[in-house]
Length: 288
Ligand code: A3P
Image (tube, rainbow, N blue to C red):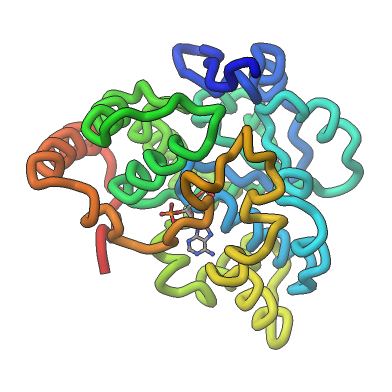
């Protein structure tokens, strides 16, 4: 079988070549957003799938029909992947669009647009651990060696989708100044899903109450999503995602990094983090 872990380099960032092409990446950068679009922007492993589920439920007023019958990549397609022109071009009405692209690559496409953007970020120690495990099961990403090596690549920004620091700083700066960009953290959702859901639904001008909210909360809990084949990626063939190597819905916790990081790795991480984030007011909850 042909190797899946080829990379496509675009604007100095590596993307999994199996699912991205120069054409699809260019298409994304020149995309015509519509005012009624909802865009979910994330760095990988930050709660993308969770937000896809939340937005689907909010838009459907807590009715889980779509969440239970249509895979997440079909109801909230990735803007930059090879199928996007075909799928997004054919979608009538308000679209939910997902992207892992950094802000600078979408800046001109989003300029002047009233599309609503939700940016989700997660504390990067949990991101890097989650990403490391994901590299073991996702065959379109390079097989990782040690966590040591992976951590180095993550901190220098040479992993797929580029630097976490640039991604988070680029998008959250927009959330500070633009009313149509909402910043939500994974940790806030984890600690207070109800409050986060209320905030998200108000932002989407689709406020939920009563049973609509209760139903939405139930269907986007970790256990419900773990057992939902439409979001747990078990529909993806084994040769693309090998579930014997790990689960997509792995742990879903805050602070799991403690089980992986050694003291020297914490020290290295904290040094790079302080340097990279010195100009960024963002704070994260690292454990609870
Ligand atoms: P872990 O690997 O730490 O378990 P993404 O969708 O951006 O790839 O992020 C995947 C991460 O989000 C995984 O983290 C996954 O378990 C977690 N996740 C997905 N849905 C969740 C939920 N409902 N509650 C908590 N964590 C969730």
